Image 1 (spheres, rainbow, N blue to C red):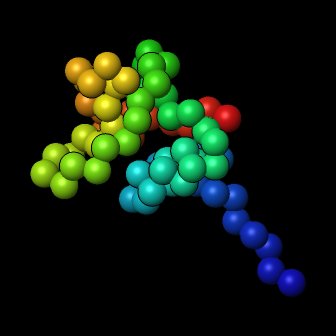
Image 2: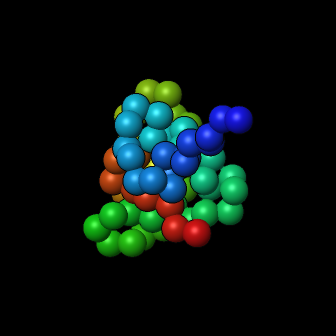
Length: 71
């Protein structure tokens, strides 16, 4: 019997796959917010830019390491 690992978005570890874990959490029903202000952000897959998370008004961009999920 194997033990299952806690997903990164639940443990708080922000490794190299943090963006993927945030998107997984978002699909599972979590709201993604910024660490500093708690502002809700959404993912936009723009391959030419590093900051994929946008504020809802579309004026500010955030890096994955500046965001966390809230369930």
